Length: 124
Image (tube, rainbow, N blue to C red):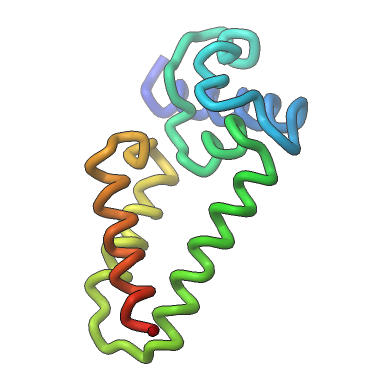
């Protein structure tokens, strides 16, 4: 099985899990406990941060996260900032999150949230 085939299997398994536990998910770290039931393989992460959020904390947690991101982007637009580096960094991390779970690593999460804070500070 190639890496791409494995990731597709993770994504399909994650979607089945989300269908079974839509609102609250299976709990933080729950994917790694139940993944073998949904994929047939053990893997610690889904390798898609957005699906990981949906699996772990469900639609309620996902909507909260998306609302946070939306408020940061709104703050950027409101500030009429010409300094795009913070937004580019945040969006780059989010794009990478489509194929990996880098936000589970503290350094990436710290960088992400620091730049989110920098953007929201500019809007005040």
